[in-house]
Length: 114
Length: 114
Image 1: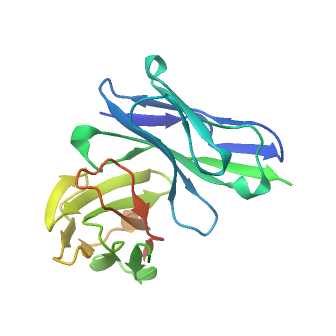
Image 2: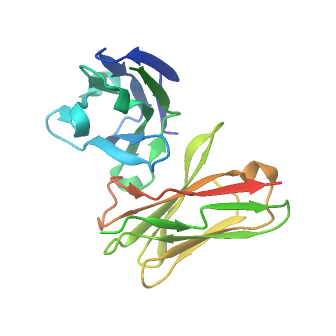
């Protein structure tokens, strides 16, 4: 069965620190990859996505992610975090024939200290 | 454009009862998906509907059911509630005929089963 693994459950950073959140998935075929974010008290929203093409994708608020097919990874990065980035981040994967059935990782809670 | 609307936002039920949750997708969106979010299991896919037809289904018991109406609004029902059904139930919609996984989520209905 497909699965998504996020390595960090809770990350605490100071403002201006760099961020990298790990995500690995298990599926050998073609995948669509996502990072979703849930800010405190808000709904889950799309941060960025990868369908095909350039493996380095850029999303909102300065986030980017790199798809490394050989490592089955899709790590999220941001060079300098802000207090407003405090949120829970979810990596998710789906395949073309699974349609909207997203498989989510367990989530990483990011706390940014001002 | 109004977002995905879920009602009720909060509800409390007792074991053995049943519950119906409602979701109104973004105008023009024809695909509606449901997810269950719990601290222990994270986000898990329940089912997806497109044009009143269930297009995909997760691994939940038959007590969990859903339907979609001609105006794309969707309901999910859980019968014979168990304590473990306590969760945040999220609805998500997309306008894509082929659901790529790029979803717009509602704020959820938080169900507590006593």
